[in-house]
Image (cartoon, rainbow over all chains, first blue to last red; front, side):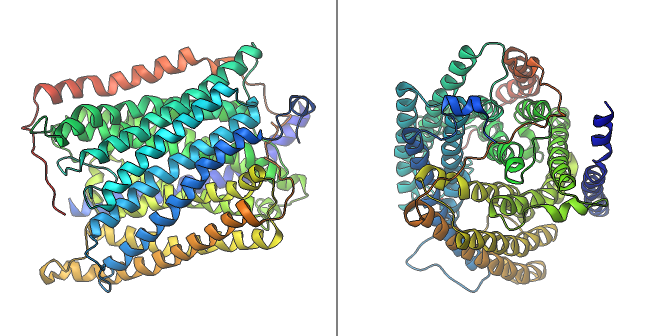
Length: 40
Length: 555
């Protein structure tokens, strides 16, 4: 169990990486949304 | 590492007879890459406004060759070849009957490909790869495309038979992960191709033969996109197979979780098919509610996509830390960047971030108007299929081809392969970025070069079209490089043994529950979702059918 916990804490970089992907998706989506609202 | 059990069963090497079948598919795939790629180059040159096609060759003819050969032929043949090898490697050598079916499927597909290609080359079928009615091709083109689909079904049956045989021989055990993934992909393919088969056999062939005068355009497009979106996932899932199963082995790590990989594939099976309306968001004749429902189902695909991203990062990070990486992102530097089998697919993975983000924008219901029928869409699928998928396929070729031919990838070829990946990334960044930007400025997709009567808006597009020509030319250099490497691996590389890498699951992963492989559950949900998403709108389409259209040949 303790070994497993240690492994979990090793995945911080993964968490941040996936978070960055999510942020990129949201930022691009809102940029497109802004254009859409502006045009239509 | 290959397990002792695998060694005992002789599964480490793809049987030569199975390898020959896989290789036959690969030959067609790479020939298609050359001809289709050449046509891509011609297209971007024409669209720059600086080049005119000689000998009366039409722009739309070249565009059709490009789309059909790369979107349909290269992909389908490579995928079937890869899956045949993957099945043979993980579930054992095909029986003679299964292999015979594989060959029959291959030849049916190839006869269909030659028939369709001949009609396109004779300028009798410049209908683009979507072959939308009311553009009308020669009937032989449609029969050819139908044969390609039927042939792929026959190969699919051979793959299913192998899987069933394995399950019977190993009751109560989860099947090898790669075999399981192959079966998910082929199940999705068999279900979705029914749509395009119905369209071609019952609508387009009778209409092109003159047996009926008119075609219901709305229904034909709906049937096409019932197939067209899962087609995208049929391309993508083999790339995911490489990412989930092969890449962890190449980097010296482990598969993060077998169960997560299986769940992600099953979610793709569920959410890839009942979503075709997101390609028809501006289509009149479909009620907004049904479009919205399919938009919601489309967005569900974000879940397995992010599961995949998480799993990949986790495999990389665990391996990097094992090698002593420090800090939040120190593991990134520890990855084997000098190994083309890793680096080239990695470029593909990186491309999937903007590709996925673009896809979510495209499918966002009314927001689709922003990009509909603009060249943004072309830029989008050149990131998904022509970068993410294709670079993963190239990366897989660097071990699969020498494995099948009994040769090795030399150091020089490995270096050239990395250069090829970089060339591709540079060319595609220029071409795809230009397409995305100018698409937002209103530039249409599909269309030949035009100044639109000197309109100011169209003049603004021209610099971006020149950028596309620059990017496209660099990409063609990338095609020459990959073909050089492929020819080397097929005929000239030194003899030797190359591994077909299959990752082992991490010892920290939980055991996969058997319900993940309960086909009764998953296929029932899959079919229920399809019926839910399509039954009422299709009935409405037939009851309130628009007037049919006669055929048009504008080329």
